[in-house]
Image (cartoon, rainbow, N blue to C red):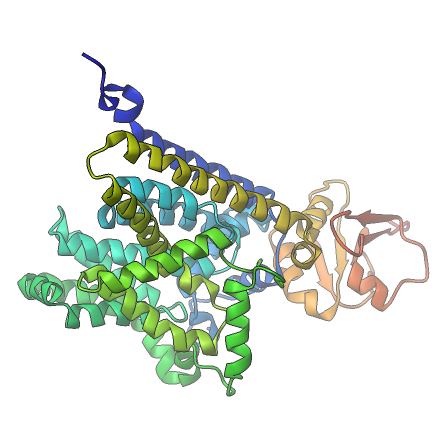
Amino acid sequence: MARQITDYLLYRQRYLLGYGLFALIVIALLIVAGLYIPGGLSQAEMSSVISSSKLSLSLNAFDPSLVINLPYHILQRVSIELFGVSAISIKLPSLLLGAFSALGLLILLRTWFKENVAVLTMILVFTTGQFLFVAQSGTPGIVYVFGSIWLLVAAMMISRQAKLIGIWKVALFGLAALSLYTPLSIYMLMALLSAIILHPHLRYIVRRLSKVKLALASVCGLILIAPLVYVSVRHPSTGLMLLGIPDTLPNIGANALQLIKQYFDFISPISATYMTPIYGLGSMILIILGILRLFTTKYTARSYIISAWIILLIPVLLINPSYISVTFLPGVLLMGMGIGLLFNRWYRLFPRNPYARIAGLVPLIVLIGGMVLSGIDRYMYGYLYDPRTASNFSSDLKLVNRQLNDATRGDTSIVVAANEVAFYTVVAAHHTHTAIVTDTAQTVGAHTTVLTQAAYHTAPPPIPPYRIITNGQAASADRFYIYKNTDK
């Protein structure tokens, strides 16, 4: 008897191989992105470090603006206190949240889609520039991705009456409370609430839940949200920032044009700190197919959630087009629906012919494989060599740390420009040797003086430097000027 394709070990273990490949890709890409690509810090990351260093337990000394993204800044502060100020310690919270986001998305996609669709979607999504960028960036952008994924996972576990449902209820309310510290996250909660109100099956599930356990979970959520409520009452502008409402009236036309370029301009992209368009052409086609699929399956709970989410986000994005992370999960789910639509259409053509069904997978796998390779290639070369993007990342922290770690240097004075004082003060505070940060050229008593490039060109000392530290990846290669105090 001829062997069937289902008899082969490779076929039987195809999903295990797919998950293994997915895990290896995620781990490898996170390590590479965290250490080497883009290989430096953006201005937003430096600002995040400054905010994290300002955290205080005293209500009188607490800056109200720091309540925004407070959970992330706490994680970053802990990382810096444990490991000092370095690129990896700054990015570590994002890398960890990115890894947990990958795990959560694996659970979510396996539940919402067939396994073949889930595997291909995961591999495709986690090789896109958008995920890799937010997962390695030491800024709170990853929090929205992490929070939205695990909110849906927790809600899904509750709706399916999973094991340890009490823990999932606490997790849902806890994540909902913590997500409110992140701008625009409230719209995800509103989408979930809208789906529960509008979808009859979700209403039925909620009515069956234990009211006592829901009350206890709500109390946990209220405790977590107490600092946010306190600050929002004292400073209403903080609440407006979390809602994404700007201080001034935005230019809706210009913002709409920016959104179009961010997602659809494949001919003349304009990149800055992050590359645009956000998704590649192939991924965007799959998302459009997913939108078409959304209209044909509008009766499902997931369609209600995605539709409500998109409807709520469109006006917010017109006001704040720079919040690219908020579109990550809706884009992923639509991409998965697009891949599922391709599978369904092909299987309908050949419902009984196994050879035709398998042959149809070959061009689809080639398509997905090409998109994966092009996504990795685009991310690597774009953030390393595109001057419009790579120039936004600085390796100065690594260079100055190398100087401060030199045990023979003695006391050091770091002379910086006025706008650099806050960041370098944090850097100097986490070194064992004495380092003084100043924005003036007075270096009395210092064994070594380090001038940043901006400080040197603002007021160059009258004597030549002992050494110039250069960096070939920067447009202005002279990064630091070293002076020795010969009187010491």
